[in-house]
Image 1: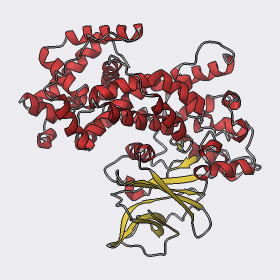
Image 2 (image 1 turned 60 degrees about the vertical axis):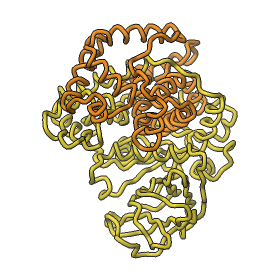
Image 3 (image 1 turned 90 degrees about the vertical axis):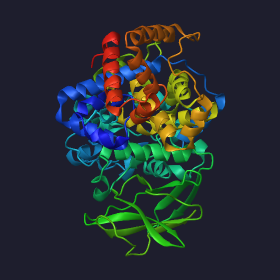
Image 4 (image 1 turned 135 degrees about the vertical axis):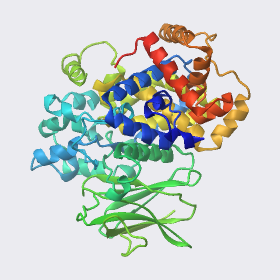
Length: 337
Length: 198
């Protein structure tokens, strides 16, 4: 049915785009068109808002109490994405105070084109981008810290400031090394003790991966959605271990969904000619599940490409930039699901 | 908008006015779990209402709602207040995730069986839960009534039914190009009737 979508003017896709009625191919086609037309971007935004009005006109349905309880529990162990683009710039322009322990600030997402945050391809993406441009104007206010100081586990809370308040982070009280470590190990601690801010998360993506059909924001969004799915799955499981160099590493997965994610703490940054590569390992040998990179700070995580089968082992190796067809080094970490 | 929020958090800390969804989302972006709970209370019924409208099955709708809220938690740092309200951001995400679920799995087929020949036109005969919702209903109902019957049908199938434009074409036995035109013309008409501007 999609074969005739390449005919006709892409602007005609605007309605279906706003209604989420397009195939992935059509979305890519339309977003290419949005890149070229300011007028189209305005229309896309307006039609998306119009669709939201349709959504707000539906009858509200009260969720079960169990849903909220479950969510409040889940967020304690679910990392938040670092804001897009901003932190990398902030890190270059304003080094952290010397007494700051390494993972004190939110870490960079590796934005593939950090220089163009002001030209979102579409509302769909724009709505998920960080407000880097607002950073300089935002005063360094301790407000957010105070806002949560009254919470039960306030003493254990390690507040993370997002990039939009990046300038404020330098003026904000700094966490002790112990707090920072506690934050970094968020996924290993009993839920009750988990830090409010979860972890500063870096999602580093190998250039070859994002150079493909997906643009970076779509990729990040899909990664986030997949991690949410794994965490929300009734059969969600996790296994923790340490890498050869002693970094904490965790595999979370769901057999029914067939998806998994690896999270590693303070995984060292690699030279630019190398990437970390993920592998499914089973009787058929290793199968690549994507590449990623790390800043060396905070928690880096990556949802594996492809399908995980029950019993698969998952490993991480260091490979030449872009990844290899088969592992060329010993795994730095491996998990048995 | 961001500056506005900042100003409020600076000067209105003692204010007794309940925080707006935008303010709550800003706090969620900083890892504030209590704010997440408050935001959930405010918007979860609307999210579930929309998701259930598409998926029909209640248990499955709750599951997708859970995924949506986890995603809100994970990506709140990406929310840009200057680009629209929190409701818009959340409801856009909710619709996309509900559609993803329909497309990605057995869910879609199960749902079709369940819906049967259910009329997908917007139902307005329910008693709305709040004045706000009722007003929104009436506004949308009025705007929908300005569409042609064919536009209304296509828009409803796509948005409330979660069908792709090619599925809509199949269901209505019309060319895909016609569906595209109806969807776009219909939404543009709705936009104008609702006075949506960016």
